[in-house]
Amino acid sequence: MRTAVFPGSFDPFTLGHLDVLNSSLKLFDKVIVAVGYNSGKKGFFPPQTRVEIIRQAIGENPRVEICSYTGLTVDLCKDKKADFIVRGLRTTTDFDLESVISQANRTMKPELLTVFIPAGHEYSFISSTVVRDLIVNGGDASGFLPKGVDISGFIEQSRRDK
Image (cartoon, rainbow, N blue to C red; front, top):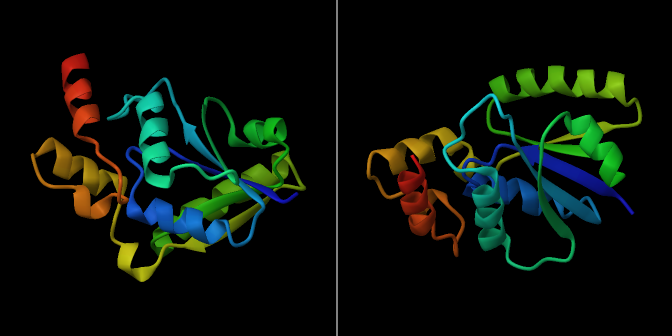
């Protein structure tokens, strides 16, 4: 079975992320969407909320696993028996950064391959940063999020928790 890990902060999961996930499902038998959590950074949504947003976005799909993790992505790949990492690209700047990271990962686990999947041109301008900025400033982010995702309850919860 060809298993890939699709890691990211997904804060929040956007149409661009969904596009890359759908493309990766054409290549792999199983894709693990892995919400990375860095305790040194304060995310907009907590990791468990991000996992729930992704569940809303993709529904039930036996070929997709969603999890959160801390630590190195390479270690997660070892734990999940995945030999591939999927990284979405929007710009050449993304490629430059991701290329360096993939080389470091391959040094730590030589059999681990990173597959770069460009987001469709209609999604290449969408970033989680833009979506968060819309949310914080009271804008309508729904046009940037997958159908079926309702973040209003998560936003209210986030505001109460701060």
